[in-house]
Length: 340
Length: 130
Image (cartoon, one colour):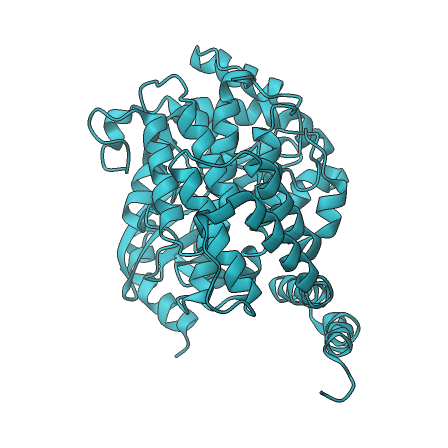
């Protein structure tokens, strides 16, 4: 039997116990797969109608040291769902889906490719709505009681949330033997200016347009929770705004779809905070560093033989694009530079 | 001395094969994307063959001026890439120690621009601070 057939057989008992003996698997299809995890579309027929599900399944490898396993990722999605964050309804954690840990959630219908969300004419109305919708969704995520998220990685006792983020960045860059002077300049700039620390919140960790499910009316749900952690809200507030995630629409700084003001206003109104762009500049630099270092370490996954992949290899030559943006942000002549 | 096609000519031939013969037959979206990545990487190699020797020599000179005797010359002066990597590593150590020499920012910016002339010249040309 091939993998699809064995996995279908392995899932049948769970489907029966969860949805009743009249339920059956109508289809199972691999959507995306790599060395770290797979996504499967799981279609089920039940007496009350069809049900579209997605199964995320561990493959053993970890993309980053900080990435969560499926059990923790599922636990985060459960908390987000309970807190009325727009996320797929979580169904079950399966510790042994044919030998690998997995979880099952609802399949949300909509567009998830960032480039299409930013460009497709049919999503023009969605783009108008997205900044405020994303701001409110992020506020709801950050409002999840952080005491419920003690199992997530986060700052050491006595360590500030922003300081923790900076420490992780430096540690990840230190795992690479080749020199990256521009990234070192970025880290030094961050070390010399520390933002105001606030109590850590539950952070999504990868909050960008390509992890949103979007339909004609805008945001349907937030996906990919494997980088969730406890941290400073400034990380999530800026990661989706970096140039790399604007998909060529550099002037629409909120993920290539709109203004940062609409996003921040909605977030601040919902959270009762007063974050300003000026205050978040430090985090914008840090978020660029985070993605730049990710391209470096992802390419090393190919180079080490851990996961041979042309896409991962090509990321190694994308680092310079992000380095140019970092240097541009460090330059005092940058139009938004906050001064020293 | 190798016979023709030269290395750049071979890269062009492989790129044309991917773009005009292979891609039109590929319907799987992810495979199409990877084929485009492959074609783009061949373009990048083409630029690297043409431009990298001069860019490396310029970076060697620039960093030598910046670092002075903070970086001793390598044993093998013919391996330019290794020499520049050693200079960059020395510069990184100085930045981490908060002892970066004056002119570091400009030199590092030049080095990043040199990488983009090969990796993505269109991005470099269209870049504006926003």
